[in-house]
Length: 183
Image (cartoon, rainbow, N blue to C red; front, side, top):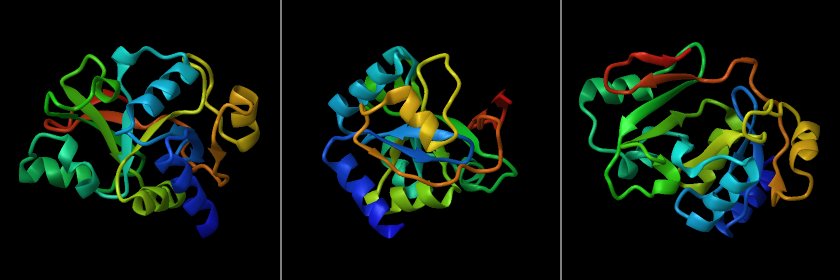
């Protein structure tokens, strides 16, 4: 598996888009700091740039440069462990590219607990775009075959592995208040 993680990271670093397993479904990912790669991903998904994307990381420190400073309670909340995956919506500086935050003044982030996705972020040394592997409005892929059916050979790499046991999408919460925005 280490070779596959290294190869996936190499493709991302070169500006590629990959598919990889997450806690709930297969995700599409790329380097969040590579504008052309993110725009290509958004185009593949047939998604609007105004929506923004989710970023995953193996730990909170990988996301801090993209967020406004968090107080101790928000840091503890975002870095905590929960029974199911939680995506946090947090305020971000205006300098965060529109291709990440969309029309919002916030950024959606998740500390991944999936071993493959976490190892990939650790290998990259930073966050990764994470959006479900499907066309906008379609059913997300949960297997490599589903990814191939949806995107054929338009991806630069497919990192195989099992998705997590939770079939529901991640819960979305406001990172400052903890309020559930989507269950």
